[in-house]
Length: 394
Ligand SMILES: Nc1nc2c(c(=O)[nH]1)N[C@H]1C(S)=C(S)[C@@H](COP(=O)(O)O)O[C@H]1N2
Ligand SMILES: [Mo]
Image (cartoon, rainbow, N blue to C red; front, side, top):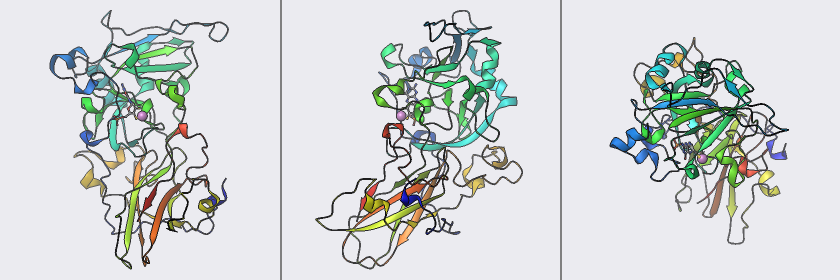
């Protein structure tokens, strides 16, 4: 643990009731930042081409098959499933069947989408669907399945395939109170549009976006335990988790001396949870060197706590007919979020800085997780997620 993660002299962030959050807590489906491969990009297809891609509610089908692959001595036995679901023999799963299962097994929760390679959250939505473990019941009994691969529509071009995976255990055994990996068919209580990966998209709550495959079409059950994700190429860590990370909004280039300035930003509460967001104001001149995230000056700086905007008025932001009590991550009796910001969700922070002299300043903000680690610790390998500290100058 870094010296800077010593929390003893920093008071925990307190919500300032009455302060109005300038950011939306739910992002409309069309307003997410989009990360997609394809030529043309699948979500730009229309009319018959969209139908041919099986990306409409009527044409969508999900195949589930077993991988016969063996590779002695690592994979001695092939995976087997009782009931493969295929297009060829007309057994592939359709949307009405998935929705029917959803009547008794559906889950919903609020999750932020974040790319491992982009230094800003892509958006946050209320996702709804059926846990993968329940969907796998359609396959009957399984033998020698250690990993579950899945991919979406990719223009029938093997070069454009975008594949991800979870272990059998991750799919089947959800720790109580944790969010399961699931096949989503609703976003913000509406059908998921093609731009967001609909009609059906995988959602892996604890991961970066690359596990949440859009336009899902095929689930492949395999005895190959290796993490054969598309994102493993280009040195990305395929088992990386969502990072607890603060992001800082741009600041005006100049302000009047003596005028106060409000610094704001987003914060993602990743798998290690969020303790607080803190900031450091650094006076700089022409000679000041830029600081690396592990510079002793930065680590030993007098970081001060920022405030987290209080939870929104849920009744006014949740889609009509949605009760907080039915959303995972909220207490089912009181409707209160179990943590704020929600785990795997995005919250917002602010701090007011007063009495600046005529000078140049740098402002940095960083998140501290529930283990006491200040961003970007404790992850040295940056290809496990974008969590460098952002610098803004004023
Ligand atoms: N089929 C498919 N799914 C995909 C991708 C893709 O290119 N094709 N990109 C992934 C990556 S890298 C990210 S970060 C997220 C982005 O989700 P969004 O476009 O809904 O914001 O989708 C993931 N799912
Ligand atoms: Mo991504």
